[in-house]
Length: 128
Image 1 (cartoon, rainbow, N blue to C red):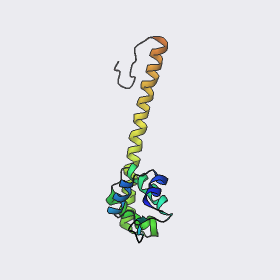
Image 2 (cartoon, rainbow, N blue to C red; image 1 turned 30 degrees about the vertical axis):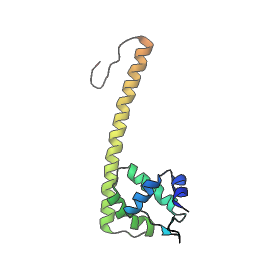
Image 3 (cartoon, helix red, strand yellow; image 1 turned 180 degrees about the vertical axis):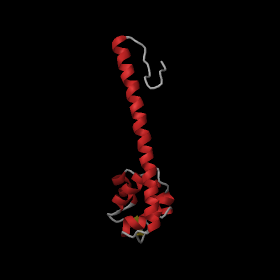
Image 4 (tube, one colour; image 1 turned 90 degrees about the horizontal axis):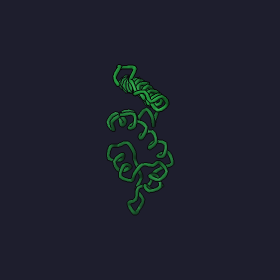
């Protein structure tokens, strides 16, 4: 498939796809006219790349994992690296859950204020 179709199917911009190639995250064949041609498997690969970027991994780290993802080749160092990234993501999830909990408290306080007219009060800090 051509770059425009891959962009449409994955939601990635054409510019992002070109960047992925520059970073060695994605490869394409060239048509006789010089146009990029991608295999069907590129759709899943782009989705994985986007998920990994969204999780905060850098292109350098993503490139390091691709041999495992594409060919199933892993090394002890790669497994250690993946574990570090997983732990970092777990920490981020913990922080997000805590933030959501505090936001739930604010929402509850605001709802109470709307129903009763009493000022909002943050129970966690005691601040008004």
